Amino acid sequence: MKKDFFLCLSLMITFFTSGIIAQTETPELVTDRPDQTESASIVPIDFLQIEMGFLYQQQKFTDGLINVENNNLILGSTLLRYGISPRIELRFGGEYFSGQNFLNDKKSTLQGMQNILIGTKIQVRSNEEILTNAAILVQCIIPAGNENLRPNKFTPEIRFSLEQEINNRISLGINLGTEEVREIGKYFYSYTTSIGVVLSERINSFFEIYGMIKEGYTPSNNFDCGITYLHTKNIQIDFLVGTTLNSNIIDWSGGLGISVRLPR
View (cartoon, rainbow, N blue to C red):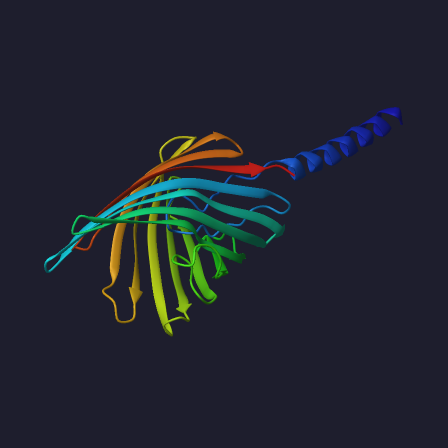
């Protein structure tokens, strides 16, 4: 009788402690930087994720007798993501822009806040064999910040994020999106395609092609690649370099960033 009692008691303790361990186990850290492809995963419920970085970009092109050079520095690019349910996160972000423009060697500068956004990401599919993960992003750039960098009206965007795991080391991410630029009454369409490769337990790499199609403008197509390093289970450091695929312009960029997830 005593043996049966202690056996039942030990089984109950094992059951409840394993449940507590499963609930407190920290999920894998998945970020939306440094590439342009937004992940199809969301931040776990009640976690706050802070993703920050800076990017340097240089552009050069010639239009007839006009020579143009842009040296742009994006500082403090920050995205806050907070999980409010098992399938929904809230998003808020913005960045500080500092740019120098040379028009036939005549210099001008522009600085200020830009791309201040609010939105949400909704996960509609997760951990499936075919189309592993899928999510919908609905967000809006608001008319705040430097008046020369911000839109005059709210600019809504919707984006579909799709992810397919090829094997335990390689994954494919695709984004398809559209935004309404109300100031000019036109729609812009964007795409991204990113291949992620696991190099080690802590280091991942990615290779990405992305671009935008604008009504009345020449389409832009770009390439970037980089690595991420998982310093701890809640801290990731990243690095990227990129360039344009358009032949009529010289354009390259490089950046560093860090993402921190605050525990509950």
